[in-house]
Length: 467
Ligand code: SF4
Image 1 (cartoon, helix red, strand yellow):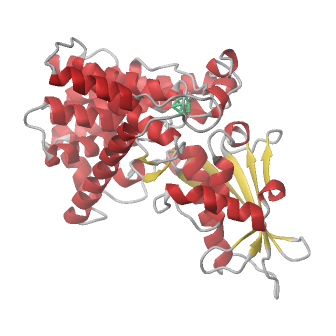
Image 2 (cartoon, protein in one colour; image 1 turned 135 degrees about the horizontal axis):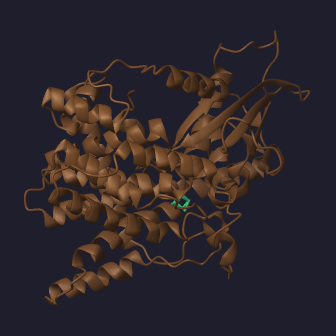
Image 3 (cartoon, protein in one colour; image 1 turned 180 degrees about the vertical axis):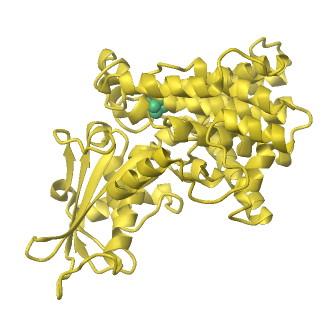
């Protein structure tokens, strides 16, 4: 089992990895497919128009998550990691006004979002809660090509056939890329660490270096941290009301001002670390809610937990350095890969336990690693953090990644630090194995009502009056 650190941490735009980045990527993939020779194009037929339809959770909460905009932008050729958030409104308005898209290297296609982009709440697709289809038509309106994609969490997108193949590979225990430490569970990870004498970060590094050079790996890790760090800084700069209609105020900047004032006046704050963790996490998630650049960690909705805990590490640990940040990211990615492989990191599949719960477990593991924890203590830290998010539902008010998501990241970061600290005070021997906790999350998610899986049909989403 190999999931690269760069599959876990991806630079993109808010507010949602599964509902914004995934659909934009799916649209990009469909454009690539149209332009390729890998489909049976009828002789003489030319694609002149495109259509898209969103299903399941994408249809229910897609408007609040900006899914429609993401599809429109994706069909113009914009990609999540390259797009300039400041140009998005104008690009969408241009498509709506013209009823056409012309992605680079393609002819002009008719695509009128009001009629050609459908939010179909009645027909869920069978493979996953986040389903969508794209169609290419000729000038007579005949469908030449139709492809189903699923956005399976964290910005990952697969076709229906790829999803089936993934399922088969998982059942057969197949790994894909060959790596020196192919751990698929926490138990295997600990056994391999014991046998090799390596840390989790060192094993993960060796796995990554099976597909890239050490320099590429370090440069990529540094780029990820730079993007996270810049996101915190942007989130601390801006004030005002978040988009979407809920009129949620951005609070990170004013809280940050108060903390700086407190710092300057040497006032004693018994909750100092908690307050700084919270403000950093909220800064990221406010930026995400505003559609800014973020890093999936492991998703956009949970993007604040890890950057906040890395800033905490830089502030409060005298030995903190760039190498430590790399080890943190590698360790966190190892844990995220195990969770994704055995359960899910998608709110639409297992609720928020899979998003903020996974982020907190990954952050706890990363912190425990850079604070000198053994592999057993790191696994313990991840388990403590995940265990105390079990059962947490996904019920975003108005389908926006704002309430409860922004504060939830703050709490996820605080729990991560507490979990790492508790684990480091023990010897790694503990009662609930991380694997058992992940399996519990999977089963709890399976049994959870669809109302609590990113559909905004239950929980806070129906009990908070929108004003
Ligand atoms: S409630 Fe959690 S899982 Fe749902 S959108 Fe918010 S952060 Fe994501």
